[in-house]
Image 1: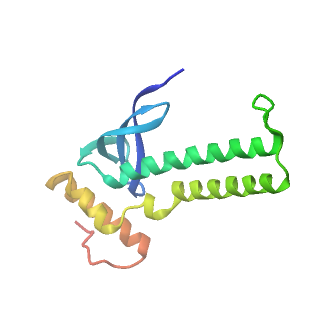
Image 2: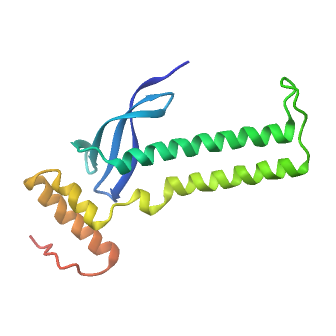
Length: 167
């Protein structure tokens, strides 16, 4: 069965509890093939997505995470073949060294994929980038969101960044 259509991938540039950036891709079997539109996904009582200019970071994050997942699956297949062999292909189980090498490769690929999914530089927006994303909403919605972003960064860093949050 082949599954295709459009789906959001590449979540990045997040400001917790406020927004994040994702790109809608055409996909085949959940593999993002080509980007269609990037969105700023606003979180709150309801979730809404606002179209913004294409984000190269979101596109690259989606493709890199996809490639990382493929590498993990390939490493798992390699490990299984090294341990058990494949009678249909006439491959006997490998010795201890190739199996150990396959196990190390599988472990490293899982670790890399974990980093790709969770590393802060790929997931969170800097204060400057968050401000740029707020500006994409226009002067009214963007200004209100910018105040929330400034407050969020002020609370996260525990410092006063010189923003009046009383208004």
